Image (cartoon, rainbow over all chains, first blue to last red; front, top):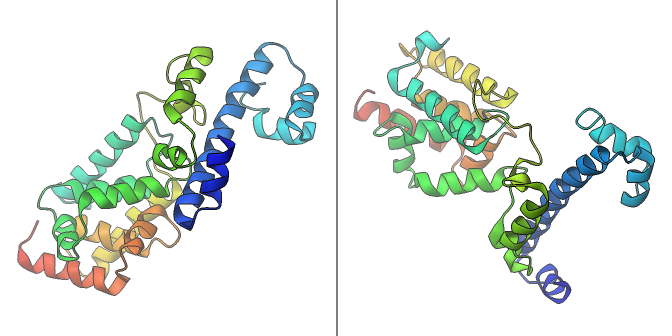
Amino acid sequence: MSSDLMSAAAGDDPAEGLHAVRSLRVLADRLEALHVERARRLGWPWQHIADVLGVTRQAVHKKYGKRFP
Amino acid sequence: MYERFTRSARQAVVWAEEAGRREGADHIESGHVLLGAVHVERSVAARALARLGIEPDSLAECVRSLKTDSLDADALAGIGVDLEAVRAQVEATFGAGALDAATRPRRTKGHVPFDPAAKKMLELALREAIRFRSKGIDTGHLLLAAARLDGAAAQKALAWFGHDRKAIEDAVVAAWADAGE
C-alpha cells in the first residue's frame, strides 16, 4: 500500500488526493471506535487504550466515555 | 408549518425521511430534503434544476461526497486501499455491517430527527413563501431555502454547479410560471 499511497498523495490531482485523505481519516475514525469499544468490553482501562493510541487518557475518555462506559 | 406545505413539498419531506432511515443516518440533513424536493416528479424544484442543467443524479452524487463521514471506495482504491477487503476483515471480527455502523447509533426504525440545518431549511422555505406571497410552501421554496443555507451540504452542493442564488431564484420563478405544482 505504501508506494501507492505515496504516488496518490504526490499525484497531480489535488481533488483525488484530498478525497482519499478524507476517506482514510473516516476509515481510521471508524476502526478506532470499533477497537475502543472492544477494548472496553474486554475490560481495558482508559489509560491503557490511550497509551496504545498515543493520546492522553482525557482525550480518549472525552471522545468515547459516554458511548462505551 | 407542515399544514402550509403543498402535496409535492410533503412528498419531498417524506422522501428525505425515508432516505435518512435507509442510510441509517442519525439525522435528516439538508441534503436529504434538497434531494427529496428534486426527486418528486415534475415538481417545481425538479423543473427549476432541469432549467439550470443540473441532473438529479449528479446532485445526489455531490451531496453524498459532501457528507463529512462518507467512505469513498474509489478514492481509497486510488491510493491502493481496497475498501471491500477492509470491510470483510472488519466484519469478520466485529460482525456484519460493523464498519458502516461504527460512527453512529444504530437507528433502523422509528423517528429520525431533523438536524439544525434541515430545520433551518424548512423555516427559510416558509420565509421564501412569505416573500413571494405564495399560498403554500412548495418544492420551489425548499430549493430557494437550500440556496440560502450558508455552510450546509444542500447549499454547497448547489454552489458546486456554479449557479448563484439569483440564477436559482430565476429558475424557480420560471418553473412556477410554467405550471403550478
